[in-house]
Image (cartoon, rainbow, N blue to C red; front, side, top):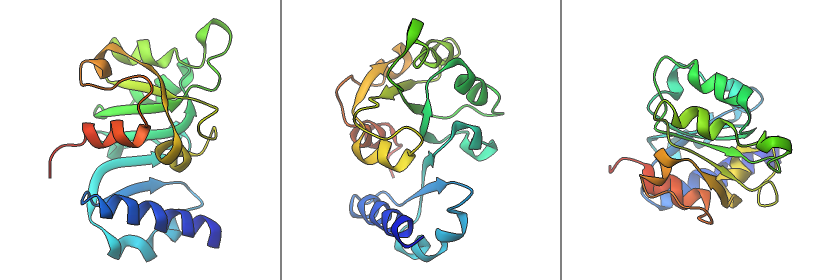
Length: 166
């Protein structure tokens, strides 16, 4: 738990140093660990979800970075939300057969949701914090492209550019 808490503290400090506020990092095992860092920052519309299955009503209006693959099943969790997220970043999971690891990009683009994937060799699959801090974008849908999100950009940079001005 101390190692995880240290990573959450580092994220909070990084986000706070950029004047943006607190990222919401949701994971069933980390919920109780967030309390000690709440004093460092305030809220911004960013969620880090190790699994896209953790997306919920609060994900609407947020930039979501998930450790999940960008497959069709992942898109279903986003499409089921009552309010669309501002954007979603997935792990490309190596893209896979028939581009299965990035098919969510097209499905989300069809309803106007900006989405992108970061490389499985740049960040661990299933680890949203690693995706946010180390991920490099490999694929971008047209809705995200229209907002200036580009392949080869660090996830953190792309997220910061998408967040509303404070």
